[in-house]
Amino acid sequence: MADEDGFPYVLPMNFGYEDGTIYLHSAQEGRSISILEKNPHACITFCSDPELIFQHPDVACSYRMRAGSVICEGKIEFENDFAEKEKALDIIMKQYTERTFSYSVPAVNNVKIWKMKIENMQAKEFGIMKPGSISYKDRTEF
Image 1: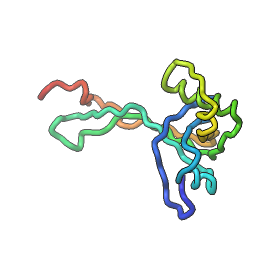
Image 2: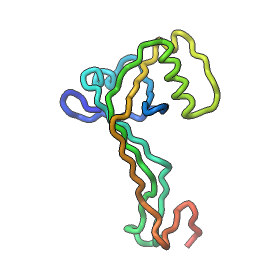
Image 3: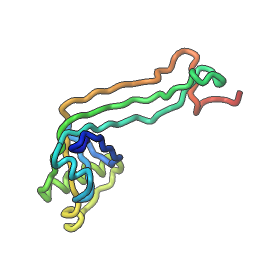
């Protein structure tokens, strides 16, 4: 997100995803909320498990990260409906565990639910293994 002076503001968050929508949660107030109330446009990025690979252990330029990334753009909307907030919390929790949860009324009322319908998405895989490359985690001592 970007504040009214154009300065970017980034923060790591837990998320959930369902049907083209990313769900996030936060406190009711804060810098991010103030920014998004003025400018709801946001960019969310994800990175898969990075892996250090190299072609030769003594050549620094042969080292690189192998991973994938996804960049999603859209507008943040805040959900205020109690039942929809519970649904969003379930979607977020499903991202991390198969357990089901119940939420207290104060917990649901005190959480800010963010929804971003993905308008644009780009994905990239980088650090493709070339012939002769070695994964750092699979290396043997040299």
